[in-house]
Length: 301
Image 1 (cartoon, rainbow, N blue to C red):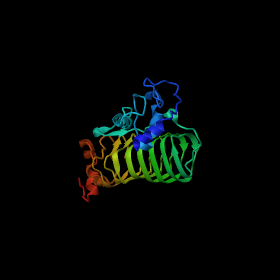
Image 2: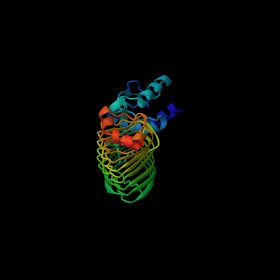
Image 3: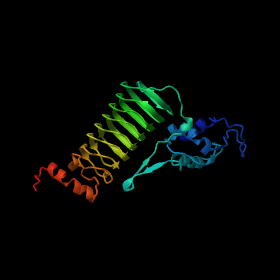
Image 4: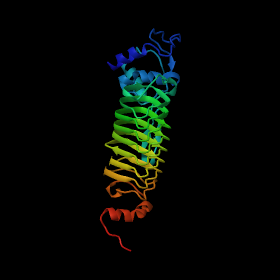
């Protein structure tokens, strides 16, 4: 069924290349170089084969053997164009998968029920609205979402850049391959039902409340400020890279594989609950008195 569906989807070329001849003379040929237009084709078939990657090969005549089709599907799903960010401790985060050249500029709002796919949202004010729904393979930039209440929210392959998120509330969030870059999120209330390959970079999260139920792969914060923020839940495989955590209140249920080694943790509270987290010897020394106090010990001179 998958093969038949693939043939039906690809039998009509979305880039109008039918005038190109096939060396084998097949009527169904679509003689393409996929690096030039492959992302659009990948987008068309992803619902059939769960494709999230890119491809880098030419293909002709989908009326071919089942074995060849299996090879093509393998290249679609695990192609070499997938991009990863390298984190500490050997972890990586897969970046969002979309082609900016094929994003639609159609009007899109986060109000009410929404279901967006391959959307570009640049500039706009969506303050204090209420909404629920999903957004996939999209780019959101220079948008004001302050005070917006979105729940439930499903995000897949989306990049947010220079977005205003202060006092916003995103609840019951399922996130896969998400980036939030250089955004202000003071007082942001964010609750991840699941987080898979999420990267948050250069954001101001003072007084924010972040809750995590489960992480698959990694959830990474890079160069973020968390003054007086609350971070709770299962922090396993959460990476804080070059972050300022002064005044943060940790309320962790688990923290196996949580990496704090490059961040400033002096002044953070709830560190005793981060069992399994990684810190350096220097960090451990700097918070020794704080840990003793949280353990109920009286420290005297």
